[in-house]
Image (tube, rainbow, N blue to C red; front, side, top):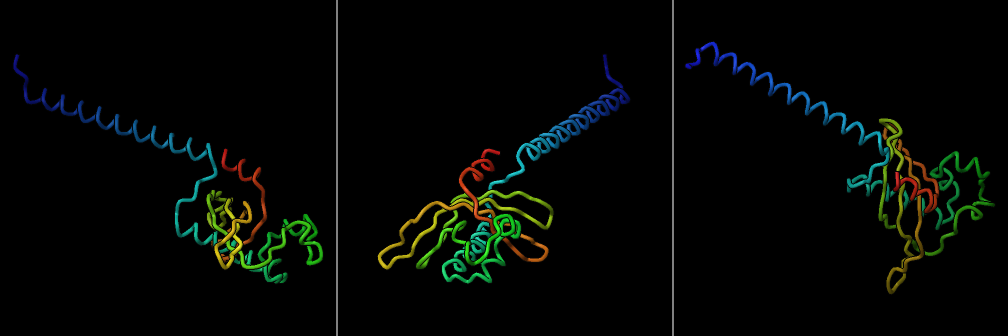
Length: 172
């Protein structure tokens, strides 16, 4: 049995329809998979070096204000809710935040982000504080911070945090 020209056209149209259906189905599934992934964890591991450096620089400024006891600027970078909830002032700040002496540096080890809005991102940061010594830097402990970046107004605020809060974010 010989196929006619119209039969070839019909088979061609069927093949094209099947291919289009498969493409649409696979795109729909991929979109749903991405939606599930995004809904599953609102925290993203920060791998962008530029953003990592920016957040680390915010923490560095905070540390310098602590070291120099520059309370005016320290209270400007501390999260307003943190200050209000703990009734912080220059007389009681060391009841809530460890006093730093000498030259310290902070090295972020791991950082997660949470997009609060398109212009506001919260970072959960874990790292080590080092006391810079003449011989070599000495690790003085693990530290945890929450850094809020207001991208629209180019502002930031810092909240000292703890390991438990960081682990909750890390575990999603």
